[in-house]
Length: 257
Length: 257
DNA sequence: GTTGTTGGTTCATTATTTGAACCATTGGTT
DNA sequence: AACCAATGGTTCAAATAATGAACCAACAAC
Image (cartoon, rainbow over the protein chains, first blue to last red):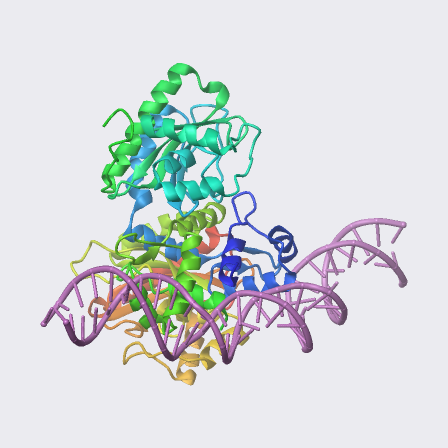
C-alpha cells in the first residue's frame, strides 16, 4: 500500500458522525504510527484537504474538497440532474431515498433525502462508503458489471455487517442472477440492522453500471403491496436518471426492455 | 516535496476549463515523469478521487470528492449558510460575486454567482485557487492574518498575473495597512486583466480571517459612485457571514467598529 | 509503410517513509 | 502539590517505497 493511498484513506474516517478527529484517535483508527499519521495529515492540511483547529488541534475536512467537488459537479452535474428524480421518488414512496455513484469497489453516497412522512426513518451518513456485496444498491451494480470485475469482488473479502449479510459466494451469484433478470435488487437487513433496501442500477452509454438509486425503509414497513409499488417507482427513477445522463440500459435488464 | 503532495497537486490541474486530462498532457502540466504520474493517478483512481474513461483513458475528478465535500458541508454548512448573503449581494450590486475560504496560502472558491444584469460579466472558474497577494479577496485576508503568517507569504514567491499585479513587498505592506484601517480591500486588475475586485474578510471566533466575500466587475464599470455602494454592500455582507458563522470582527477592522 | 503520438510497463538506483524512543504540555486524581 | 496518563509533536538510523530512463504495443496521420 503506497503512501498516497494511506493519506487518502485517512479522509474516510471523517463522517457526519465523526466530523472532527484528533491525532491520537486517528492514529488508533488508522493503525499507522503516530509520526506517519502526523506527516500525512500535515500534507493533507497544506493542500486544504483537511484543516486543523488552532486551539483544539483536531482535524476536520477542508475547503479544497468543496472546490474540487464543485468543479466535478459543474462539469458533470450528477447531483443536480438527479435531484428532481430523487425528490419525486421521495415523495411518492414516503421513505428515505438515496443516490450512489460507483467508484471502483465501493459506492459513494452523492445525495439522499430522508423522508418526513414517518416518525421512524432510515438515517444515512453522507461519509459512509458502501461495499457492493451487502446492500441493494451494491447488488444492483454488481449484477451488471463485467464478470471479471464482479468475480474479482466476490472472490475478495466479503465483510459481514449484520447476521443477515450474505457472504456465501454461490448464494450471492444466485442473487445476482435474479437481479439481472428483474433489473432491480433488494437487500433485507443485509447492510444495516432493521433496514430493507430496494435499488436499481444507473447505466453509462456503454451499458455498464455507474451508480444506483434506491429506497431504504425500516423492514417492518415493507409489506408486500408497498414492495411492489417501491420496486416500480425505483426502476422508473433509475431509468429516468440513466436517460438524463445519456446512458443506455442493457437488453438483459428486467422485463421492461 | 512528498509523494502525497505530488498526488494532490495533480488534482489542481482539473478545472471547469479543463475537466478531462490524459496521461501525457498531465505529465507535461505537472512536470513529473510519466511513470510517476501514472502511478499517482492510479492511486487517486483506486480511491475514487479521479475516474478514468474506459475508452478514451482520460481522467476526470471522481465521486469521492462529492462524498467528502458533502460531509464537510453537512457538518460545517459554509456554502448553504452564506448563500442568502451572496444572493443579496449579487442582486444589490448587479455584478459577479464570490465566496472564498482560506486554506493555508490560498483561497479556495466555494461559491459564486455570475450576474445577469449586464451582457459583460466577470467569469470565474470554480477550479482556480487564488493566491493571496494579487486579488482583493487575498489582500483582505492577508491584512488580518497574524503577522508571522502574512510576512512569510510576502517573503515567498509573488507571482505576477497581469502588469498591474503588485509584487513589491513594501507597496503591498502599505496596501495592507490601508485595508486594515478600512476593513475592506480592492484590487484594480491585479489578478485578472480588466477586472476590478472589492472584497472583505470573514472572521473566525478568534478574530482571524477564514475567508472572504467580494465583488468582481469589469474595471470600466467601476465608477466612483458604484465603488462606494459596492464597498458598503460588501462590508455588510462580510459582517453578516461572520455573524452567521459565529465569528468576531477584530477591533482594528474598519470604521464601523 | 513510416513517423509521432498515445497509454502503459520494467527494474536498478535513489530518495522518501517509517517507527521506536523521545519531549513538552495539558487535565484529571489523589 | 505531586503524580499519572493522556495529548500533540519531534528525531534519525533503518527499512521501504518512489523514481525515471528505456522499453513496448496500439493507434492515427501522412
